[in-house]
Image (cartoon, rainbow, N blue to C red; front, side, top):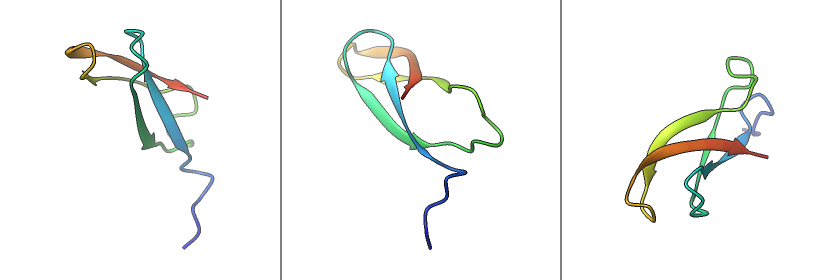
Length: 54
C-alpha cells in the first residue's frame, strides 16, 4: 500500500528550546492547521508543548 498524502508525516519540535523532536502522522482532513501536543521532553525533564515544524 502506498502512503497517502492525506496522512503526512509531521515533526513535532519542543518549545523548551532543547531541540528534541517527535515524529508522528496526522490526518490533514481533520487537523488542517498546525498540530500542538503536550508531551514529555527528556532533555528538559518535564512535559512541554511540542509544535508542528515544517
